[in-house]
Image (cartoon, rainbow, N blue to C red; front, side, top):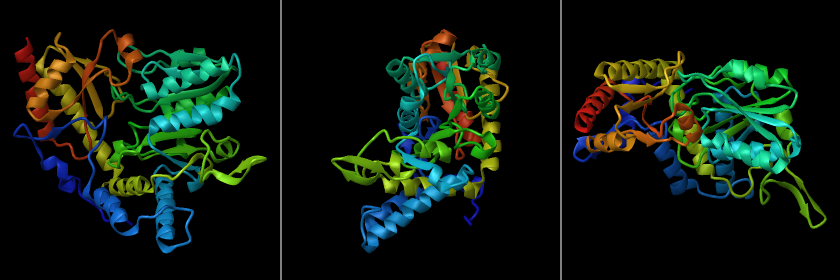
Length: 408
């Protein structure tokens, strides 16, 4: 069992948070893009390269066996973290983008036919739009889009109208990376299954912030990136329902994913190895497992409550400043807040904040269709993490007020 870590002590484990930017303390509020890494993750990855580095699954020597054990134990950690019944339902990938592309290619290429439909929403990240567009173009299927309301919530009545016997895949984000809107994924999965479709969940923005239970959600696939949950870049996972993975063909061929190769034909390994062609980044997988252990040592319910208070503080503080447009005010709201400062371009606001040591994200956030729906070119986005403090939020609000006065 992991040793418990108090939320009050969390920051000491993140060395980058002591850095100064332009002579000012770093106020890091771009966690929706990527999170910082605790010393436990940094050291776990470094230790493998220092002491245990070897290729996995293929060697009979000690180092190979040790690294193989670490890699497969990491798979078990990921499965446990999202309550997957079997660790063989976890496929390691580089990020959420790769995971969704895997489903689109390995599942969609053989299951969809001309006239079939794939459903996404207006609030999706490009990673949950473009793979499905490419699939539909190849197959001759149709991409259908769920509307959102003016306050940034998913319009489930729109989904109800779209769903039909032609619907084969419903792929929806759990939490909007722009607005922080939390979607009712469990209900969406039920609605998809009611018409015989599978449900795919983009959980990139939810896994770091709330408890995920794939059994309770009853989703068929769930994808997330490690680098958004305090793990190394290049780490991530795809959960797939076991019986579906078993029936899918690989989308990449090469070493590791085979049973037997001959020029007469090739047979493939059982999942998950069938979908992990080539030498995997087993160091990143260990880093991911270490990060999830770190999150568990603090406790996701504690993290979620802490972050909700911070998000409420941002929203209330921005409203107090005045002249600020908050983009998306859903009833159920998570870790990110997007806003506009008067008529100022988000880039200008972001540059001023940067000179004050405040890191936020500006632009369309890889969600151009959402920006078009909202009638804007982009936003300023502040996104919190477990190590974000009330002082960070005060610094942000003071910075936004300063930027507003400078640009008015």
